[in-house]
Length: 285
Image (cartoon, rainbow, N blue to C red; front, side):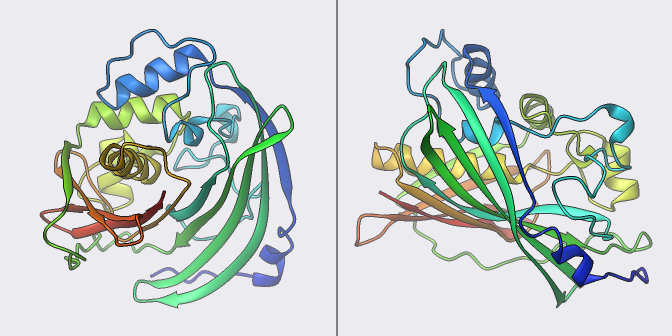
């Protein structure tokens, strides 16, 4: 582990920091989103309901290349606090769908930092940043989300260990299997304007960050779970909460399992043969 000094008081000064970005749910974004998920892109029409999960592709951080860090994320210290830990990962979020996004919508995305905390975990020091994202269309709040980002230390001399996690249930009511093809990861990075090199730069992911292969995107995994849950229920979710458990890598099968609950909602999880459960979620209908 590296000897990193973190001033939590300085990081907490970012609480309350916010930004507003505008974007459009365009026909081309919808087509590319569908194609990335191996869905017939068709010809989306203005006013048509947009695909579930497309909001994670809206209003990404856009900075010039010289302002990217070594990992090709935007340099720290802009909207998010300058956490001095090398690894930044999507930990999960709680999303409330108040209405649907539609093709052609002009979207205002308001982002706010609401909490910063340090914790000691099994892998060393962790820093959790909680951000709130609000998506507006014509001044109407359409989606509200609390997003958890985790930063952690990394020892360059040690490869990332894979620990197999137990599965929460063994007889799903619905199941899908997705092959994590590297092209799927590359396309998702492109449509979300995500420069993080662990998703497409194999030498960087394996030699610098110590992963066994390219890393599957957290929001892409969440999108597949959300869509599987809605396919099973044949309706749109009112809310969706998910938490990352372990990384998923390119070139392996990702299993998506859905379980019906007595209250009408569903539990779901993703898993791989090597890691067991990799993400868990609940969809409320």
